[in-house]
Length: 341
Figure 1 (tube, rainbow, N blue to C red):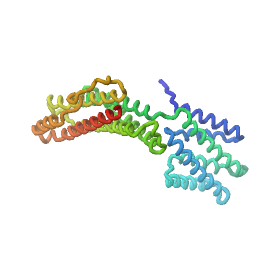
Figure 2: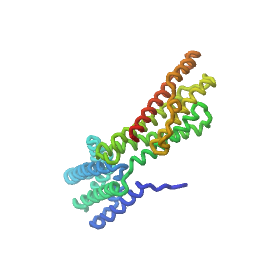
Figure 3: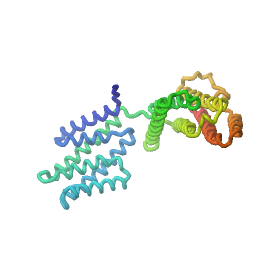
Figure 4: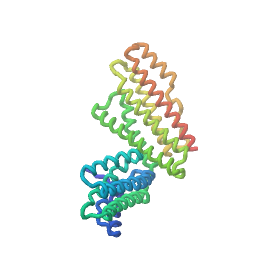
């Protein structure tokens, strides 16, 4: 079994190591809390790292303060600890800092366990160890190999398109084994979700941190349309799977839909290659080769529909999805041309 070690894994390990060393330098004995904090603090983006740092400071300070108050004025029994846990979860949700809940609860448990012979200063030591772990891990995430969202987004687009292309080319012809088709289809669904998350990450970077030097507005709109095209292709496949009943169609109708899907997926591939600069500057795919003739296509679909309205009605849904996919491909083509020129 092959094991891939990514940058985030390495940065997590480095964050734990440095956190423990810093705690030892300052004479803090509770290094395990710094290590746990470092593990939980690594985030997938620079913006989320900064946000995590500030959120952790706020919620951990609240958690430590409330815990110390209860230790000195109420007690530290199991019921009290449970009540504080519930209170901190509610406060974190109220402050919209849900991502800090695990580490905040670690802080609460660490401080609430400091009783008896352990005094106030030892409880604070645990709190500071957690802050050291959090801060160290976040600074490593920001300063050492910060994520390149543009590169990752395009890699995700290309890998997602490969699965989309394969499924699109075999959806009507039904050439692929059912188990293989379902396996690739599930992977496509997961990759689309991952692609949406990647886009959301650098959208946050651009909006919150103003990284106009990394991605300009025109390129951002282009990436948004790339995602939209992938989503429309996925939606088209879902409609084919749900509504295309092959036993109600003839060879001519199968050929019509199969041909349109083949032309559109070729057009999609051409657009990605053009954006990547892999197409010769003087080469242009003609309109007849690239975009379906919508009027002609709909006329043919309606002819088949008139033959058997009850059984062919669902195919109109697929026809609409094909035209919709085509429309978004055309828009992507225009955006690429504007960006390149």
